Image 1 (spheres, rainbow, N blue to C red):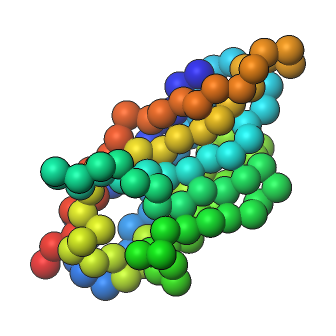
Image 2 (image 1 turned 90 degrees about the vertical axis):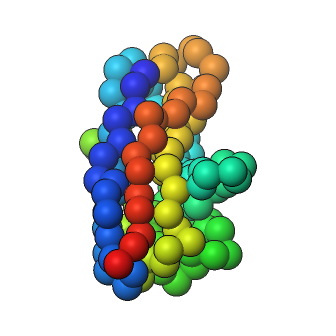
Amino acid sequence: VQLQASGGGLVQPGGSLRLSCAASGSIFNINHMGWYRQAPGKQRELVAAIASGGSTNYADSVKGRFTISRDNAKNTVYLQMNGPKPEDTAVYYCNANVRPRLHSSPSDYWGQGTQVTVSS
């Protein structure tokens, strides 16, 4: 199973950016998917997560500004970032809990990380 993240880059404060992460390989089903971030000198933290049924949860710091969604047919999770702030600058990692085959146990997989820089 591989997760390929894309969409990072430089964005101005108050702008918008959309991150995508596609899962590929041996996939029977995907449970929860999510986005984490890690800023320099800080621990990795959860930004947003979405269950297979669509329920979501967000870090307090991004509520009302970021939206997580998923396309189950494409095994892809998205993070729409509206109104980003300089403190949102970090490397963003996608995560997926994947069952590779019918009778296998699910495991967590990680994307390679994509840099998001919020600056004018």
